[in-house]
Image 1 (cartoon, rainbow, N blue to C red):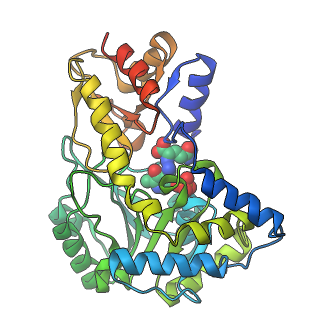
Image 2 (tube, rainbow, N blue to C red; image 1 turned 90 degrees about the vertical axis):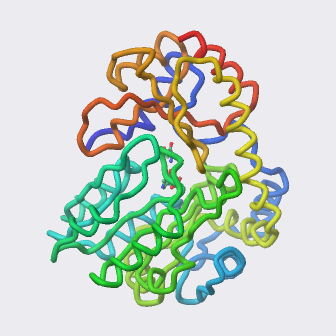
Length: 371
Ligand code: PMP
Ligand code: GLN
């Protein structure tokens, strides 16, 4: 397996002292209230193993949050597991279900951990290419690619790297196919609270037949500005969650206890996540306004904290060469998008992360505008 592009680009940014708009993480602080809650939990002695499925208070807070946002109740006793970030949730869901020869449909550009994990367990990734600028899925094509070996479909909305959202109609078409062919789903919803322009997040939890076949994976790192804490969760109906926990107990057993205690309290207040869309929409708009006169063509971003920039008017280089040159000589690190695609041809888009202070975005835009 190749080294993850996020490691490669963040290291390059460090080495060349470039502004790092590559790996997706905020460069501002997590809420001090939340940080204090972690310290409090440590001082209160929550420094030993958490229960295998996660702190019960946090599982209850997750259940209440999903009930509030998607009108679906997951049972905190049997249908929720707190994980070491969404990466571990995705890994464990695949490990629990995919065996040699199983086909897993995914949409490319795809987040980088899906395919290697599928292959690690002998599965076969079946990539379906989404097309710029809208990256909308073609459900007829998905139907055509389903075979007797298809076991699972992985979806990711809001989508990394494009910022595309699945519509209600997308989810209904997915639900139809999943029901008809008896498939499983991983719905990677880590950016569920970062949705722009008044759109609604369409969680798999909102579609009953779909939810009955789906592992939903989520990440507190994205929602509460602390990607380094690596705490997330998976929810799924009881039989799926049982299989998930069979793996989870020997994969990681349980995850960071004081952080779970703190999140259990913090998550109970919806104000702590409901303002996130507005916060990031302002960042997106601030950054795009700065880039208005640049020669990049700006693709639509409906959610996430990422923005795709098309550089065809600037250079005929491949995206990897372009991103390397940008980092080494112009001192702005970004992510070349070809690495998210199954056919490694050159794409003319780079991904930038705008989860940065306005000063950082201004500095970066001043450089990008010179190209
Ligand atoms: N899925 C997607 C689409 C992501 O962008 C990320 C990471 N940022 C993850 C999963 C992994 O999340 P975590 O950092 O919580 O492991
Ligand atoms: N999800 C983050 C991104 O897309 C990176 C996470 C990681 O470094 N593995 O940039």
